[in-house]
Image (tube, rainbow, N blue to C red; front, side, top):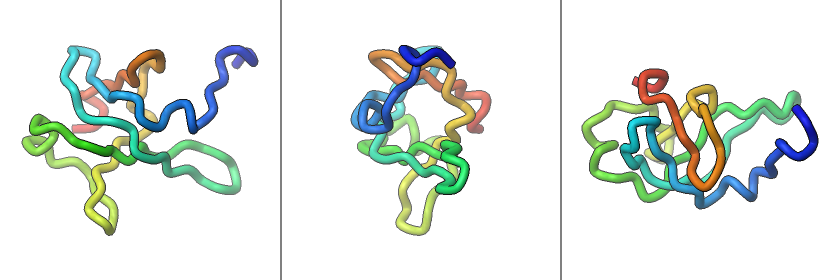
Length: 87
C-alpha cells in the first residue's frame, strides 16, 4: 500500500458507515484490532440506524454492534461495506 493510501484510525472514527447500495448503518465509534499484528478486526458501530435493528449482527459484551473490518470495500467521505459479507 502506498504511503498516501494509509489512513490513521482516528481519521475513521466518526465516519458514516453505508452499504454499497447506500443503506446507512451508523458511524464508526471505535476500532478493534489485534495488538501484536495490528490487524483490524471489527468496527464498533455508534449511533446505529433503525435498519440495523432488522439485521442480527454480532455484538460485543457491552451490546455494541460489530462490523467485520473485512467487509469494508472503500474508505473516503464514507466507509462503504459489503452488506453480503456481514449477514
